[in-house]
Amino acid sequence: MAVKMRLTRMGDKKAPFYRVVVADSRVARDAKYIDLIGTYNPLTNPAEVKIDAEKAKTWIKNGAQPTDTVKALLVKEGIVESDKKSK
Image (tube, rainbow, N blue to C red; front, side, top):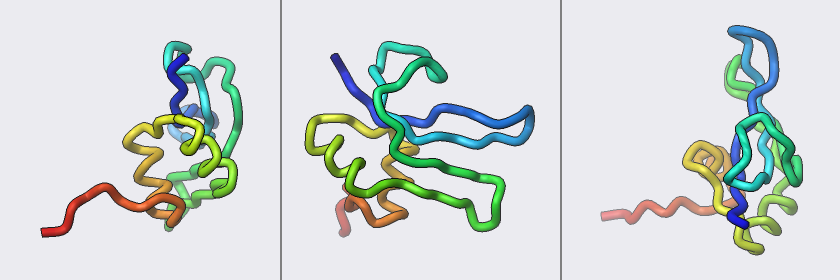
């Protein structure tokens, strides 16, 4: 089973709010998930990100792959380091 850390959309039309979840990569975006690890609200200024660092590190250690967007949020929060090589 391929497990991913990704966003699931909540909120109203034109008012998105996202949950950061761990889910099987084969299920639909808003389908059942394995674990809820945080939230992301892009409408606030600055965008509000709340992620449980311990849960995120545990899932990454166990092999969960974050999507590009979730990885950017984890780097922004200082939970994981960026993969970019400095020249």
